[in-house]
Image (cartoon, rainbow, N blue to C red):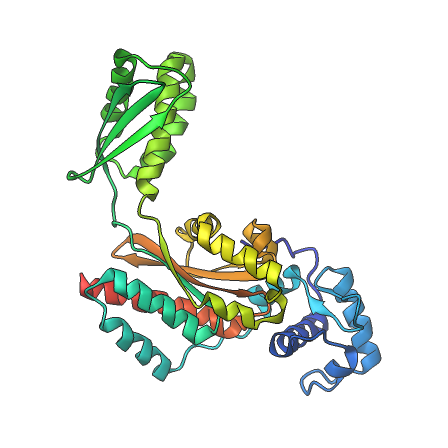
Length: 352
């Protein structure tokens, strides 16, 4: 998650000034100059000293100067240092927590409605976009797999999940496989992985294939690799999310030009990038923050995504979060995401 800022950590005075600059920029959305910062009651530094410190911060890559202004704005690296070490997080008040809890209680027996409610609440409390992945089954185990040859380089894959759920997948292969080859592959998988969590099967299957490459013929290796793809789709078949308040992003100047909005809304529609970020957050310990380029997707370079997984018992069953500009009020948004995840866990536990 975190960028490497160990080589660019300013001294105490530099950190104090960086905090003040970022807080001012988050509040006003305008580049911050030395004269403005000299009026900050918490700094007590002269404009000349502030200019020198800001020059140091710029050399460290923590702030940058837009061409049209003498002021500075935070870089993603500056925001990263801010959220990791400088920000003072503000927990939601008791009234807000009770309000969130009451709204969840009304939908506790309906996970689908509950997810929509939570997404809307995240949007409402932050004035940004709220996102919640639909809860998946706490455990998805492979009971049995079967391969049936079809015509034209196709294989029917039958997956029995959690004893009762049956999923069928038609996969296209590079060549035709005989019934005997498919039988050998399904026997291998059923013998070694039946009863195992599907996520663990997918992870371990490829590892075992690499280790057994010398002792396994190529045909069997290839068809098991194809089966891995089928199980990938089976595990992700329910991986959807509910997004609310995306039009709120139009209110932020840095995201409001037509081309940026069009690409953002295309990403929301296609879902792939958002699902990937949620999937990368599923095993996080608490809140995870993707700032700008840290997401790995250029379309989100001007955005931050704050996520937290939610659990039932010891199983992580989903992720929720907020999508907004990098210029978001992290001190408020991060605790709201964290608290909402904990309250959602409680609502799901009581509704089950």
